[in-house]
Length: 260
Length: 76
Image 1 (cartoon, rainbow over the protein chains, first blue to last red):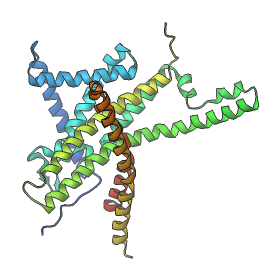
Image 2: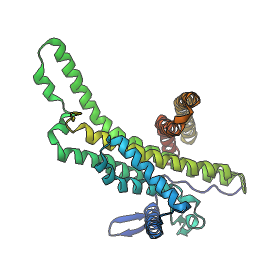
Image 3: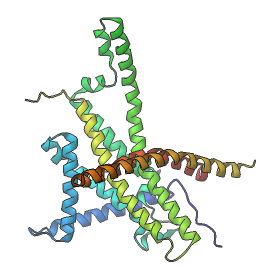
Image 4: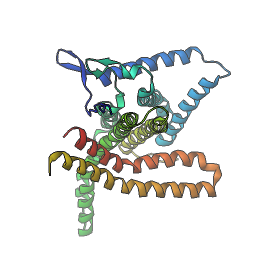
């Protein structure tokens, strides 16, 4: 039996330019970005009043994320419209990057004994970067708009000033402790959404390699189909969680509006 | 015990124990979602997307153990 192909967890560097390593997953990310740019120009050029099949698909995708944004931001239409391009671009990038391994020929190009392109999301750096940008960006927005209120969600020292009795003191210390625990929770959010995407896609790749090594022809097909489906679901889940996390972070720092 | 076999056993135990919780959780989510869809078929579209999201969140502990067993296998 032939030797099993090598599986490596970190992406392998291809080029080096004055200390910066360009890995094979970064090259693949550039390819995916170029594909998205070409796709969006093509879709934009062929918009008709009576939509074709492809246009209906794109429109329903944009519409779905618009609905999700509206329900997350609570009928704040302006912000939903502002964030829509970012969210749809995030979804498209992750979705197309997850399906990278099913592109024929491109995925098997070799350079000095290692593959030239690698599925971008099967390296932790891309999911981690996207998660940090979404969650950290929401924190940055919340902090620049209402700095004291935002910090007050985590460091609840103002509750100590309101102590009137022993029961109040117990409650205040409990709240203070829970607020400090929320800081850990923010890091856990980033780690959980990035590791979920990375773990699913990398496991799909490993399963693909092992199954194609063990069997041949038609037998790997159900597994490839399964990894395509899980790529779609994970792209979807990452985007929805990013919407909900960022909305909850920014909304918790704002003064509650009176419903009049 | 030589280190390679200890590594393989550790990865196997990690993945096997980590898959119990998500299995139970996803089963419960699926069962309840089916029940709700059978009671109220009009909302099955929104329920389906929410079911998928809840399942993916429930799956995360399984994914953590998967990542750890992959690290045990390929990095350490």
